[in-house]
Each structure stands twice: as structure tokens, then as C-alpha cells.
Length: 103
Image (tube, rainbow, N blue to C red; front, top):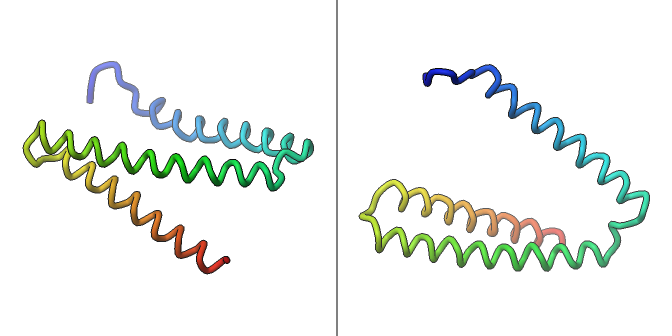
């Protein structure tokens, strides 16, 4: 352990942060529901935004992967990026399968 590092406060911060985030999300969702913010237009806009974000993330991961392969020999960074890319694509396959069953 490093000197001056308190494991207890470190471990208490994560659940506390998650609890605060959950409370804030709950109240903002409740307020939005009262104001009727979550209509068809909201869902259409956010579905398009998620699709665009997914494509951009795929491109960024592939570019980062290429840069890592050029700059460094095959090592930890290469396998970390490969794992992220594989999980990204697997999540797309699962999402597409769920969407296909729904529609």
C-alpha cells in the first residue's frame, strides 16, 4: 500500500457516488415524466444519437487499434483494445438480436 492512502475512504466513495447519482437520476426522471418530456420525438432523437455514437465509437476504436499496432509491438495495449472492440461488437449483436425479436 502507498503511504497516506486510505482504503476505507476509497471503497466508501464508489457506493456513495453511485447512490448520489441514482437519487439525482430518479428525481430528474420523475420531473421529466411530469413535464411529458419522454414522447415519441424524444425516443427518435435519442435512438439516432445512440446509433451515431455507436458508429463513431467503432471508428475511434479501430483508429486507436491501428495506432497501437504501428507504435508498439503486440502487447497489453493491443489486447486491451481488441477486447474492447470485441465486447463492443458482441453488444451490437446482442442488441440486434433483441431488436429483431421485438419488431
